[in-house]
Structure formats: C-alpha cells, structure tokens
Length: 178
Image 1 (tube, rainbow, N blue to C red):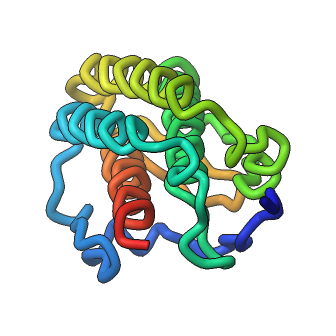
Image 2 (cartoon, rainbow, N blue to C red):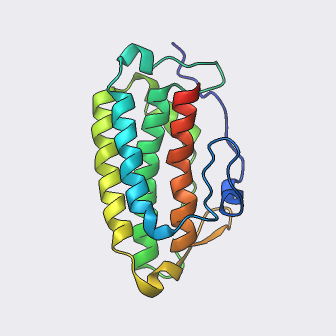
C-alpha cells in the first residue's frame, strides 16, 4: 500500500465563490454564510457514517490518482482544524495573513491512509463542532472582517465561510463516487 501523494492540487479554487462546482454541485455564490454551521454539522454526520465502514475498504484508493475515503476524511478533519484557526485569527486580529499549508505534505507526514478510521471520525466530528460554534459566534460587522491567504487572496469572513464549506462537501463526493 503506497502512501505517496496521489496528486498535487495547485488549483486556485476561489472560483467556487462565483459559480457552482460542476463536480459536486455546490453553489457557494448562492449560499449564505450563516448556513455554514448547519452544513458543517450535516457534513460531519455523513463522514461519521462513511468512516463506520470496513477499515480495509476505507483505505482502498479507487484509482492510483485518487485518495481513499479514509484519506479524504483525514484531510477534511485537518481542514476543519485549519479553518478554525484561521477564523479565530480573523476574529481576533486585523487583516491576518495565513501561513501556507501544503495538504499533500501533510497527508504523507501524518500517513492519512494508515490512520484509525474511528479516531479520524471522532476528531473530525470534534473539529466540526468547534468550527460550527465559532462560525455561530460571528455577528454583524464581523462578517466583513478580512484575512489573507499566503498567495494574497483576500476573504471576508462571509466569503471565507462559503469558500470553506465547499471543500468538505466536495470531498464527500470524491470519497463516495470513486
């Protein structure tokens, strides 16, 4: 079982804020940021269902160029933690700049594919609950607070929320469609 990265995603996914994703169908341009906590909880629930499956099956990659369901779940767990940190920065600092995050290096360093699905499920659920609560704490003018990605892309908390939620929704499709 190779734990090599399957791909290096260098695409700029900010376009999802302007038009629906043809692959997963999510339309961030018509979504509301205040819906993100409920979307996040529903997404975490679905991941729990997936991760309750046979661990050996969860580790199988459907194709050499695609992650296994377990790898996608662990990535989503890490995305929840990362975005919780970034949202906290946006709420506490003026115009923070986020450090770059290399998801492919992280997948190899943490050996996503060999992880225990029960642990990933629990941690994913915990981070989803924490992040949902943090999004629920945002109100009024806070939705317009700005943060910057390492490539210079600017997000308000509103656009950040809608951009963020596409990732776990999209990866559910990746993990279940094959």
